Length: 182
Image (cartoon, rainbow, N blue to C red):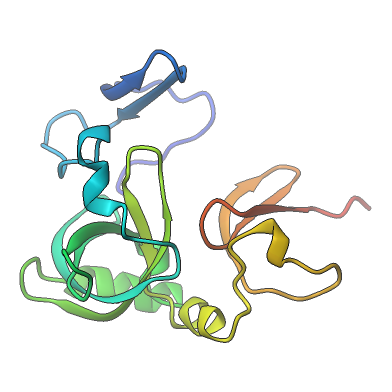
C-alpha cells in the first residue's frame, strides 16, 4: 500500500457494511474506486461447500491494495477467494513479484488453499507452499481438539501486537505467542 497507517492517524473511511445486532462495522479507507463484490448473507449457500483446508487451482480475477482476488476453479461450483500479498509465497520478495506479475483473467495459481471464511462468507486463502505442505502433512490444525501440548505446529502470523503475535491456523483457530519479558 502506498499509504501508511498508524495508531492515532486520522483518515476518511467509507462504511461498506454494518450489523446492528452483532455491533460490527466494516469500512474501507478506499473511498473512490469500486471494490469487488463481497460475500453477503444472501449468497452464503454459494460458499457452504467450501471448507478450510480445501485446495484448488485459482484464476486471478482482480488485484488491488496488496490483495489478489481469485476464482477457485477446481471446486464445483467455482467461488471467489482473497489472497493477501503476504500469502502469495513463503518469501516476501517472491510474494511481491507474484503480485506485480499477476494479470487478471490470465494468471493461474496452481495451488490455493482455503484458510477461513468470515461471517460475511468471504473466503481467505493462501498460496504459501509451506502452509499447504503442512496441511497435507497434518501439521496445520483447524480445531482446538486437534492440539496436543508441547507439539510443534505450522501457522502464520495474523497480527502483531505490542505484547506478542497472533498465530493463525485453519478456520478460526488462533493462538497468542506472547513476547518474552526480560
